[in-house]
Amino acid sequence: MTENIQTLAHWLRHSKSAVAFTGAGISTESGIPDFRSPGGVWATNSPVYFDDFLRSEESRIEYWRQKSLTHDEFFQAQPNIAHLALAAWERKGVLHGLITQNIDGLHQVGGSVNVLELHGTAREIGCLQCYTRFEAGPLVAEFKDTGRPPVCQKCGGLLKHATISFGQSLSPDVLQTAAAWAKRSDVFLAIGSSLVVTPAADLPALAKRHGAKLAIINRETTPLDHLADIVINDSIGEVFSELAAAEPQP
Ligand code: NAD
Image (cartoon, rainbow, N blue to C red; front, side, top):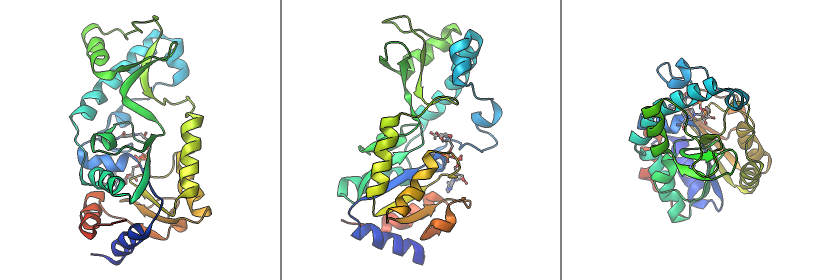
């Protein structure tokens, strides 16, 4: 076991309020491409901006077409060792909670409960008019059958995945809670994020400014590496197999 992983396991064993912050990199080993992967839907399709979604039926059709492609990818994926280890640490009281930029819902499938989804979830659809939430599966199936974006069964409003689109603001409540968790954390683990998308990427620096030890686990370097107490540039699967073997306990 490398020294950094031993140190991290030691911190977690003695932590009272550790917080994990995850990005698309934690789900690549579950088969979901990250933002920059050459084969990913995000790399081959231009995202539909929120204003365009509101303005034109053509944009809504394109939005639903793209979301239908990623829907199957998300629902076939299974949590991997990192999702499962984080959920186990929460159950053991090692981890206070988890803040994620991901929209795939794999943390909850893996058993995490105290989860803040900064960018929402692709597992649900929301009505933009009456705010009713629906399960994504049946509505994606309806779009695939008809080629028309579904509308709300209750009020006829526009339906969109419960995710934050480009040009749409993050929920201030979720962001505020995430900032409070970051400030209170004694260990802050940033896992699988390029740490370039703000305001989410501001959280590790906020945690550090308020006294947390900061660990960054990511295959590539990030712009926040200079702030971190530990940087581990390796595959998340490898790192978590070693960390799980070290069995952080409260
Ligand atoms: P990102 O794509 O910008 O960065 C992911 C980082 O993870 C990269 O630096 C990459 O080198 C690293 N990485 C990938 N696989 C890894 C592995 N197996 N081991 C170690 N490191 C690995 O992702 P981001 O910072 O989360 O920002 C992208 C945005 O796109 C987010 O806002 C997110 O909402 C969205 N997105 C979500 C998903 C998802 O829900 N799974 C997938 C793609 C994009």
